[in-house]
Length: 316
Image (cartoon, rainbow, N blue to C red):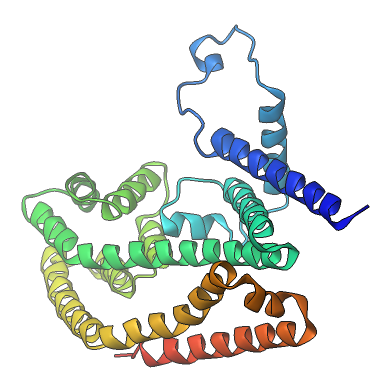
């Protein structure tokens, strides 16, 4: 078979994978959230398409291989920390669809090697996206802590119990504080200890400040005292820490921007070469010296990213 025939076969396969990825995205990500037929009419038979059954089977197979208490990167704890209302199997399935779609696009643009690079880039991007969601949610939660403490102490001074003050804070706050406070109230009403729920929030949001609050409440439950006054003092300390944190972030903004430019420029230049001068870029994906240069570039970029990450994140 000629080279033209092989390229046509690969192109048809790539297009087929793209269409399959788009179809799975529609069925898994964009499917309707309406009430199920079986809940509206329990006696009516439930009719599902073949592709839906295949998707559900794949999701169930993935879910059975993920341990519920696993602390891995795609555990339920990570997804809860990112604020994603999904099961780990759903995220893995969506990640697989995105990877196949990126690989197919890469194959149509630059061949097999570029398809592998695009698939790897999709995997890394999804992992970075999850970390970014976790860090943003944690930062926003830390910013909301002083106001939440003020509402809790005000509620207890008005005569409410601690749990009622937490419930009022959940109703008056925005996400993610409202979500975490509501979860504390729901878990406590189901019989869980309040200290355990508070500790889990501190771990889930990676908030050292909320860990102090949980410890203060636990100490108050053991020795007694004016909890509202204690929360006021803790709130003042947290406000001072947030002010220092914002100052450090402002002073390190130039370093963070420089790190983004230095790390993103080589990658963007390589992508642009694929469009502006394909013959020049083809050397990197078709010859042994090109593979070696790509490997060296990836290693050096990884080391540079690690070094810059340590420089722009001072500890205080």
